[in-house]
Image 1 (cartoon, rainbow, N blue to C red):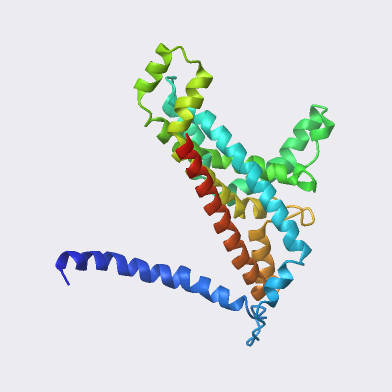
Image 2 (image 1 turned 180 degrees about the vertical axis):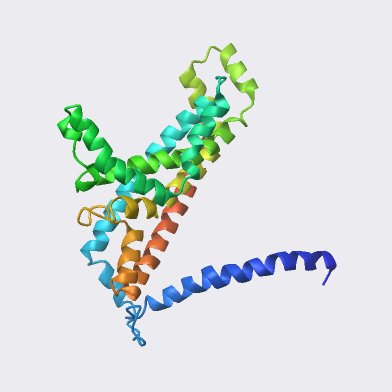
Length: 288
């Protein structure tokens, strides 16, 4: 073994061993238990084949969790990317206090999601209802998180506020790679701001748009911290996400094997969505 290759093996093998031990092996173990009836506590279990997987398609709680999670993920992904792109274009312009604004927008991203969720839980439950009540706006004087129809909107607002920062940085990185010559040439041709954006800016940052859309969708499909800290899945089960359902029923509902099957199916769903997004958006990059 050559000495230079030995150094690479020394760097690679420990990382591989740690990743396999704490990530791959538990995942494989979870897949195995998904074919059993183990409740997570009993000392023994039986193999049940695909029974857990078939039962998932008739479980109303699972279907409701999928509906909420997809509604939340799609709406939040679109809002976060639209706002991030607008903010990035503003921060990329020649404005004063640019670094100050960048720091302000990035601050929410360094805060823990659970901490932010509990803070906004208090704001939505106490501060906003009292404030709007004193202003005489009765429609907004109640706790939005206690309403089964609108609680998800509160979660979307907080998630967008915290998630915009990272996407803004990625878009800003893309905007700074665009040669200034292109804008100078468009100005000479008399192109307006909209044409400048649509024919120069957006095509040039298309790879960054693809990355942001895929990462945002994947992260929001796995939403957990904001839900458990703000509503704990309620009112009722109106805001129960797939991740929260797997966690709650798997570890405290004696459904370890059943929710392991749920997790396996959800992993496949996220992989299919991410792969489809990448193929579609990369094809769009080429068309541009």
